[in-house]
Length: 347
Ligand SMILES: *Cc1c(COP(=O)(O)O)cnc(C)c1O
Image 1 (cartoon, rainbow, N blue to C red):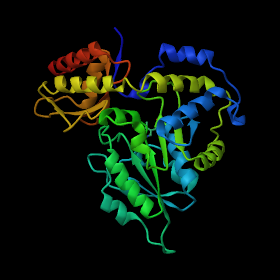
Image 2: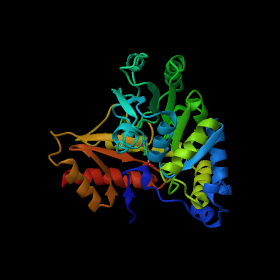
Image 3: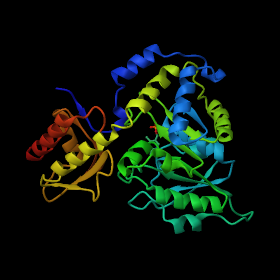
């Protein structure tokens, strides 16, 4: 039987349609700006985000790095959440590559930063202080359980940014999941932001790549920084072709992943010994813990037992799991997962 891999939506393999589009893609040298498929992906992306221009990059990490470096000079300060992917999981790239200073504000459980905290973190104009240049929000918020940030909240942060002449970048790795969950157009979630990065290679199933979108002058700056980081990719249309299929055919189906995550949650919570995080799942990821009174096994031991039954889950801490639904998880896989958990607890 096939393996049910719920560790992440990054594990998604490209679809047959993507493989075919990749094989047939028209390509050129993208460093010369001559790859028609990359150009098309960038145009489609910009249109979807309601921005002037887009830039194809190798990963979400590179997208955030390039965007933050395009907004900030050396020594400038970026305000971000203490649980932000760009703070926790991007190897400190903004400091290492850009000498950008970070100010971390506590993320609340719903993924937001308190507006008062943002206000308080903005530095007065004084030679003692770094210059506050940028605020970064993450939508959906990965470490906060895949929770979407609302249009209203994003607008409220953008208002603060505008009033203080600070820019706003959205780490929208899963912005289409946020839009699907909130029932809004992705454009409305990013309209007041100066830039956004989204991933093609997560729930949208493309093998590689992310896109940064913003104004044309911003993307011109970002393009040079991408080059500095070694991110000019020549006949990258081979990759961009899968990204186009992702945007054209994989966005509208994300609600299916969310529905399966909900179904999985409702079944798992009936198993004695499993406690779901309150509110989970918001989108395509669910977080659950093992109740010590019922389950003496550690998370790693349970994960090993599940693995023997061909079910892979993410162990995020001693007794906590993350399960992420995606294109390659169907209804039968959801049932197999629930059965496997029940069996693992009896062992
Ligand atoms: C995955 C992710 C990224 C980085 O994307 P990579 O392609 O893995 O580098 C950035 N931000 C968030 C919120 C993510 O979940």
